[in-house]
Image (cartoon, rainbow, N blue to C red; front, side, top):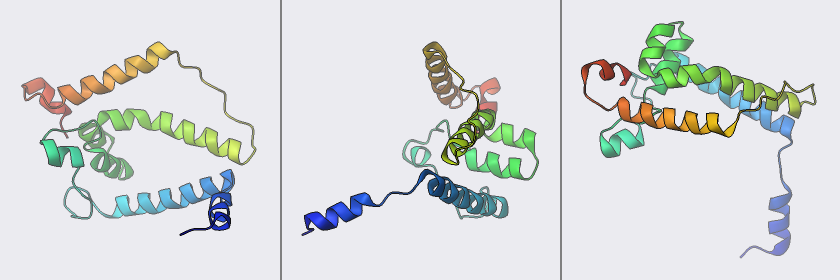
Amino acid sequence: MSTDSEIRALTRFRLSPRAGYIALAAVGLVGVAVLYTFDPRNSGTYPICPFLGLTGYHCPGCGTLRALHQLLHGNVLAALGYNPLTILSLPFIAYSLADGAMKAFQVKALPRIFIPHQYIWGLFVGVVAFWVLRNVPVDPLTVLAP
């Protein structure tokens, strides 16, 4: 059994925000290098999507690795074909990561962007619609499947 002093010692260990972002950047760079090197379509390196494996249907994230691999190789249209939702959300993800990193390194933060709750709900509805529509086997909608 653990003693109280051991538990306190374990809970005191925390990464500083700077160390956290440095670790995130290092892991991200390794991930980008692996994704650039190994093609998700045929390398056998990456596991299958758990949702796809269990249900046979595509989730909103299906095709993300293939899309990012194509984007890293400069094939924007191919990336959009695999998962347009991921590619269109990348600028927002990058902005959020950059803002957090600037705060962690105590640099002037990026301007705060207020998003009304209606837009958040609209985004949620859009993601669910994308999820459903990419699984409909009707000719114009089959384009959404990866």
